[in-house]
Each structure stands twice: as C-alpha cells, then as structure tokens.
Length: 131
Image (cartoon, rainbow, N blue to C red):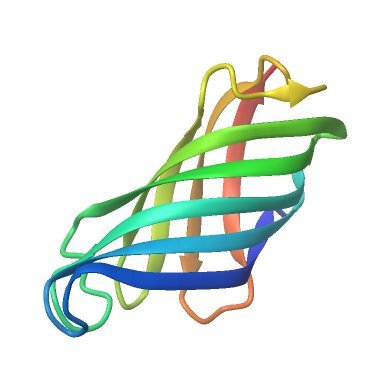
C-alpha cells in the first residue's frame, strides 16, 4: 500500500484573522512508503473562508520536493499539488514538475492523487510515472 505520514506541520496566517476569512502559509515534512520511499518537504498557500477547515471548494496550491526512491531508483523530484480540504479530510491531484528529477530519477514524469482523513496517522497516494 502507498502511504505517507505527516512528520511536521507549521502553519502561519499571512492575511486575515484566526476564525475569519484568511490566507495562511503551511510548511510540512512528510514520510513516504510504498512505491515512493523517502521524505519530502512541502509548502502550501491555504485559504480559509471562516472558522475551522472550511475550504469552500477552493484548492491550495503547493510544491513538494521528494527525496528518496521510486520503485528502487534513487534521486529526487518536485511535484505541484492542487489540494482540496475540509473538516473531513484532504484530497489532491499532483503532477511532477518537468525537468525536476535528479539522480536515477532524472527525466521522471507523472501524476498522482492523495486522499486522507484528518487526524489519521497515514494517508494514501497513487502515482503513475514514467522514466
């Protein structure tokens, strides 16, 4: 099974007030297992319409640099996320940024999804790639 776990999440309000409409910046560290083995650092720009996790159908853009291996091939690559979130959880689609692969992952392309329930220790992902 392809899963990832949140190792760290730091979020700060950029504009607006806590509990009201606001924009926030989040910086996180993730640990991957399955097809992808390794760790990553991801940065998101978030919009909250009001109290709690009311994303109101918006998506949060983010960039994530993954370092480790894909199917045993070592290197790193960057993915661009479009993540939706609400009080129940998250779901995203992502695409590998062209030209971002290094090492044995040079030239990697691909797309994937993430899904999960807030508060659970791991979330799942899919990843279809080519080299």
